[in-house]
Length: 172
Ligand SMILES: [Mg+2]
Image (cartoon, rainbow, N blue to C red; front, top):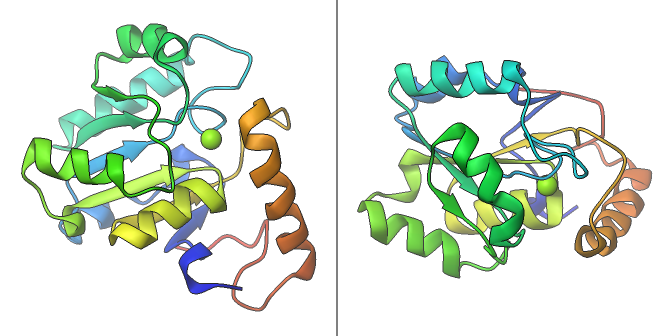
């Protein structure tokens, strides 16, 4: 398995991420994928539990961003609900949008963590940029049309069950 596809941390969901230890590593910007990471693909509102987590993280001093390949219309309601900046059409894993974030906030990759549910977009993109990559399990088994191909590739990769990385074998 290619090193660039291996997440630094792999946990079940965004609630299981060791945020305190991220803080200790000097990470202050968290880029969240939206679909299947904080929101199911066929829903428009995040749960109250998720909203609470985002408030808690901001109180901890993190700057939060939604960083998604989805279209802006899809993210509008989530943005309104969570009141945090949104980067839509991010074209992950391409470097372009990651660089945009770094330039906009004048920050270094080492202060950023990117959280998502897909290896070929979220993890690969983050690793390529030197962001701290965090993989979570997808919230649902449904995928968008565009995620479908990457998910197929992912599934065949998981079948091989490398020593380095296995679906369901969490680590921090
Ligand atoms: Mg996703």
